[in-house]
Image (cartoon, rainbow, N blue to C red; front, top):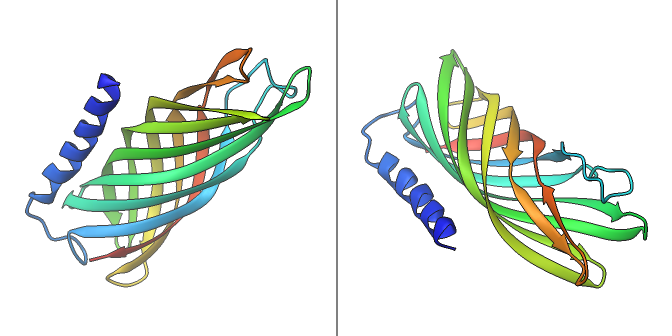
Length: 195
């Protein structure tokens, strides 16, 4: 629990610290974006019938601040889910994950285009539902991402992003507990506004 509180404090401290850096970007210091997309689990699990979780939806909200022309920090929150069936009973398993994360991005502006890459850390709150039971886990994780945006005008932008997450969870139906990884690829569209 102490590790989770420390990680949450680091995320908030890092984000608030960036607010005080003086800089004016293309339209403003700050931006907000929404990122709908898909989650593609990338880890084999022997306790599942097909060994892997299914592709599921992902959605993120991000608040960011430009530190300078080539650096930005983001605080975000999101949701993703996946499903599978446990062998040999074919019992359905549904994994729902809420996350809060911090990302530091390096930027390469090329005219109206901004290419970026970066990484960060987060807290992942997962709810595993194995009929009729469910279990909630809280775990720490890391991520790396790369993408690009196109500035439609001084404020509105669209883009595409890929992210990889490393995190873990455990599942239990009361009698059996299984440790698992939530490692996976996220492919998201990006729609945002600078202010």
